[in-house]
Length: 380
Ligand SMILES: [Cu+2]
Image (cartoon, rainbow, N blue to C red; front, side, top):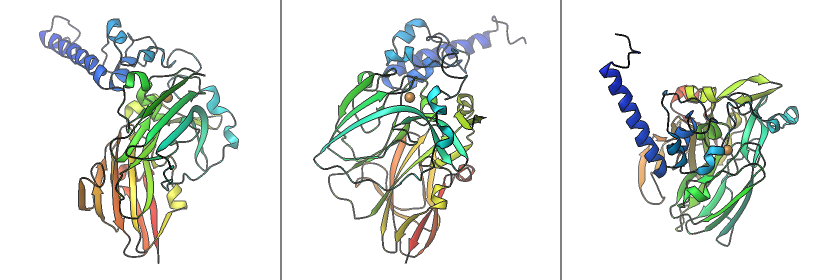
């Protein structure tokens, strides 16, 4: 049968179903920030600025006006022949000074929590080159010039005052998973040169992701705009050496003038070139995380994705405690591996009884092999 025949009742059914799905998805977009923006920005009907809809469907103009984030209609210049080159993160800023960009190891230590119960963060969204390995410089869309962005440490009940100023040419925004706040206002996109400010008080302890939520969200997370906010509980957890690991995937285009841009079509294909902890390949193999025998180690693991899970495991060790959510609530004992979902975060603890060199890995080894591996060295 000719599948292009519109009188084919089975095909009609398929189309009706698809339309129903898109309609439901549009309604869903009002409830779940990011979902609607990603769907609509990928629709040719939204503003002409998004990527082609991979399902071949479309949303109506009325649907696009009901977006959770009205600014999304201004969001990216992908596919418009603007300052971006095709489907990549290459913007003018991401090439400037690329060859002089210096590699630095991303410090995984959890920074101390600022005293006083009030944290003021004045951050800039910056489009800059970032050296993620000895010979690899990427065209990063960043918070504060690094991938991941800075680690934030606060406590349940603290007040976090946050301002984002956009120094890039593409609109950007901030979505803190540790916040309960109206996303339409707080997480809105800001164009070049403008700022957004909001305040929140974390209710729950845990390891939370933050990320740019500007559409297409996949493109902005996939180009480096994410990081971790660790919310400690009011009641003290057992003394430990605390580290933060943010897993993420890199989908890269071929190098141009020494810089590899992030590639949107590759992100959609979901087959990454690298899967890394804290934005670098091999950094904790070359310079491991070091502790002493007898130490308790607490890993706050955030999975920025954008797509794949992090099946966290330490070779030769077991987690005596893993907190499914809100430590010290929901402890699970004697865990070998647990998967942290994209957009999620968890707390893993172990006690270093014996000296040695213990690889911490994504035990989904297709991804461990692509870089999600490092060493925890336990010294006598
Ligand atoms: Cu962004």
